[in-house]
Image: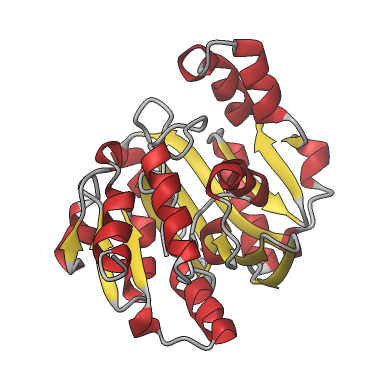
Length: 282
């Protein structure tokens, strides 16, 4: 089980897996291993990298809130946030002018602050600024006073706010403490090396998603290798028998890891596959 951003690909919204990573994944799948991801990405973000990886195993998406079949293109399991808590958080972040977005019933919403941030940062994200903005905002609904009244709050799967300073991110996370059914983590983001807060239902972490996947494949958690780099990946590693932190991982992950792989820039994900899966096949 691999995290995506910072693990399979570097932290950049346009990043794709390197040839070495793609080759390692291909060889592992051909050898009969299940290779999957547990990521905060939505379906479209996952599909963009899967154009290169060609993963066929079930995927854990949206931070653990969604189990997705990439072959049939359908959801097999989903855990939404509690309606009144999602509504309370969204209203609070909206009033505070925090750049944030969320997904609800298949619709993606961005706050004004998030949209302006994406427009402002276009020059550092892509050579073609207009194309970057179009791709980032395509299909997304601008969250305004009218939209706040029409959101299906009972179908919100996750919320993400960024970019923030470490102190701001921690303050945002602390503001979520009154919401008893929410799980939140602070992670780095590709926007100007800022920080984001990622929130899901407390029973929709990457650990819950992986355990649901394991149940469907009838495999034991101790048979799974988990690889990640950020705080949101702590539950990912805790769900797996062999815990691997990337060389660029947060110290909290390295502290619980059985093995520290090379960084994402050094194709650490490929090294994990080669060391723990393919070495016994040669």
